[in-house]
Length: 106
Image (cartoon, rainbow, N blue to C red; front, side):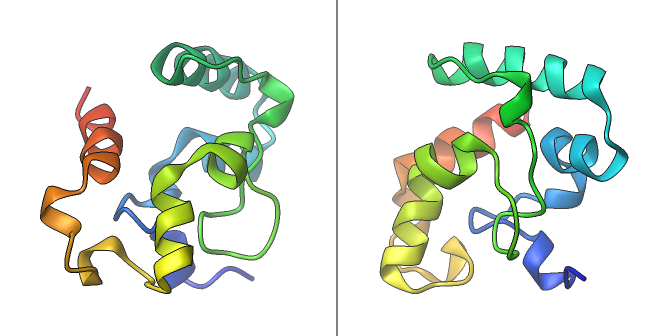
């Protein structure tokens, strides 16, 4: 069972509102396809629907290819040993975090 704390991504996004998490939880293939297309466009790297499976950024379990291998925010937070980017002194000026959060607003 995933704890509520584990469903908050390092950058501060709510995993429970993430389409990859929702698609995994509901086994929703149409949402996987839509999310893969969007993330491919946003990240300029091919992401296939079968790669859209995630149980939460900080939770044990499956991650999307983006979250597991490509997310610079997650990599940095793990390297620095912080649970949330906000607890890092470089939070406000971090380009990687701001890029992720700017996509959330679109």
